[in-house]
Length: 154
Image (cartoon, rainbow, N blue to C red; front, side, top):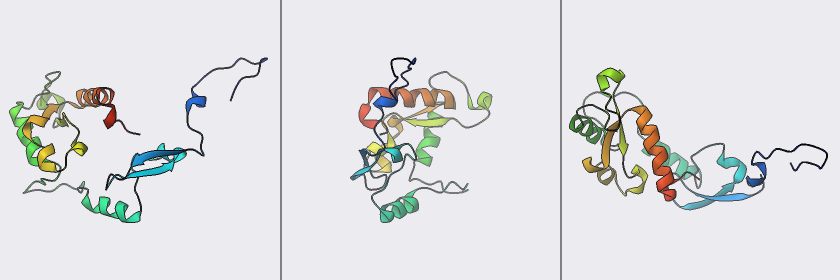
């Protein structure tokens, strides 16, 4: 809201935000087709879908969060992630902290974002993976968004 001449005004960037009635172009989380959603909806969720069919297909394709023993799922690269952690001697490749010191498994970062590959096999090649602690992982993700604007969230 613009300040009147008899009031002190502060600019918090509200005027640069799209109006609630504006539409914003984004991509369907499942089929990656271009879609248009209301601007107010962008802040509500990071996942947008063409329709209920795409939403259902995405839900069915996403890996379960339940723990499974035995054969690891290859869809999101469970085996590649284990190999990357072994290759990196179970230590963060940025700051050097070990899994033992961290008290949990390291994250495995995709140097080129997973979603940019046509298949999980391409995305999870060992040369595209690096073992990092959660703190360094967040920094790498932020750096990637700055350097590769095409991968920024809309």
